[in-house]
Length: 75
Image (tube, rainbow, N blue to C red; front, top):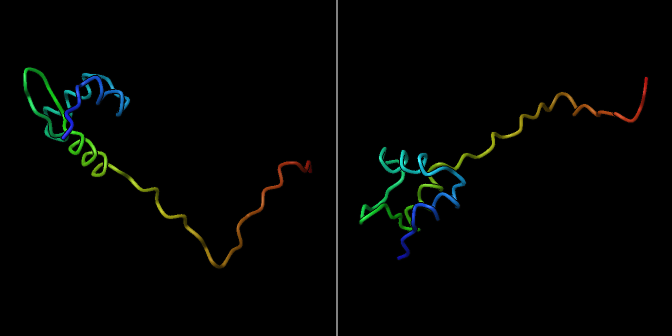
């Protein structure tokens, strides 16, 4: 079990300390209060997995072929 310091979590998430503390205090990210906040690496990975958002599937209309864009031609 590895405990991460707030600055390490901020580096991984690329967020500010105030954002991290908001996540911890709201319960969205699980942390432990020792003398200061600590986050288990497994809890951080679980948070990242929960907040993962897949791109929407591409809409494809079978009746029309995809439009070809010829930008190099001047009409």
